[in-house]
Amino acid sequence: MTTLAFTKGHGTGNDFVLFTDPEGESPLTPEQIAAICDRRFGIGADGVIRAVRSRALPEGAAILAEEPEAEWFMDYWNADGTPAEMCGNGIRVYAHYLITEGLVAPERRDTLPIGTRAGVKDVLAGVSGYTVDLGRWRLAPERLVAASGLDVARPGLGIDLGNPHVVVALANGGELDGLDLAKIPALDPLPESGANVEFVVPEDPLLKNGVAHIRMRVHERGVGETLSCGTGTAAAALAFRHWGGDGMPNHWSVEVPGGRLGVRMFPTEEGEHVSLSGPAELVYRGEIDLSTL
Ligand SMILES: N[C@@H](CCC[C@H](N)C(=O)O)C(=O)O
Image: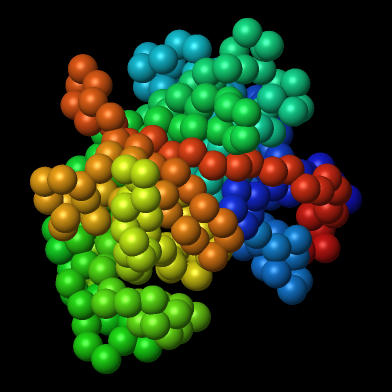
């Protein structure tokens, strides 16, 4: 019997199974990950996060060259068993897990650099959650997006945040609520590595105290509709600011079915960065016999 000790956590309802494999000796197979994430036959989650030391991985050398203090790597897997470069909700939950499990020294707990497949990200602990600097972002090609519940395909703006996103503006909340995201949206042309697809509408009023408020639903690559997607909320805010032009603020509040996340754009020496703020919760610990999956 091979037993896996795990912790279940979530950030605004985007939920993850986390486990520790410090020396990288016990990776799960894609089939085991998909079985763990199954909501009826497994534990149930949108993704799996393996806590592994950067130095134990082949990609760790590049991470440690970028930031020698990035001791831990977030080995992130989608529910279907495919790896992803980044997860904005996952990395806050992962930072909370590392701190709660005592895996990081107390002096590192305020600003924690974490290795990901999209480079090193700094996570800052705050009073009501965590803020992650998602780093640089870039515009990507437009796609036509057809989704169940929409009369015609709509243009979607590509945004690359280390992982791929396509953001679609809808006319109103009725259109957003009418979407059937149990069916995968069709992208034309289809990006080679797929994409997370975000549908957004402005709240009324858009601006409250200098902060822009929008609502979003998401179909995550490798998962399906989720209650939240952190990198997706950053992509949605960046796309909305792009469409709005001059006068749009750099502070955004994005309501998702699982709660609300904050997004901020700010200048740095290497160009503009975008950050994401929100809660991180650990809700359950358990053990699973992998042979039962
Ligand atoms: N939920 C995440 C994104 C997880 C990865 C995504 N499904 C992908 O394949 O890129 C987030 O909070 O950012």
